[in-house]
Image (cartoon, rainbow, N blue to C red; front, top):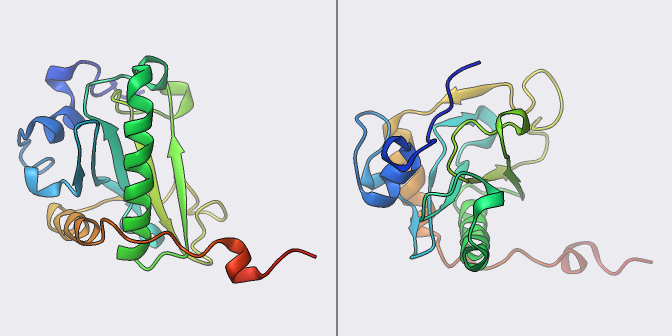
Length: 173
């Protein structure tokens, strides 16, 4: 098992995004796609080929996991997730979004600063099926590609919600 990352604020890569610190080759201020007083968002370092544009939304205050998030911060975090989800969907031409959040090592958490995954989905992307299904098939995304992704999401902040299912599929019989 690898050593956990981000256990304390001073060594947390996600806190580096929030405070504007650079970690050469890993974190730089230009990777922020969204920021508010309660949350920040940036492209994930690890993404699947069929789901490029995968972003992480984190609370601004260092919080190890969902159990420790201050009650007053849930609304700000979820509002940011909703805003980023619409922007990711628009920026990457997604036809759906998957939102995931993991807690503790055995729950799949590997950076111990609460983070919510916002993953663009496309028909037939194999996200949950096949040999490359989540979490297999993850690739390290270059700094340059993550800069482009962050800029695309930032450009699409304020995107409208997609049509309601009844508008697409009609009323159920």
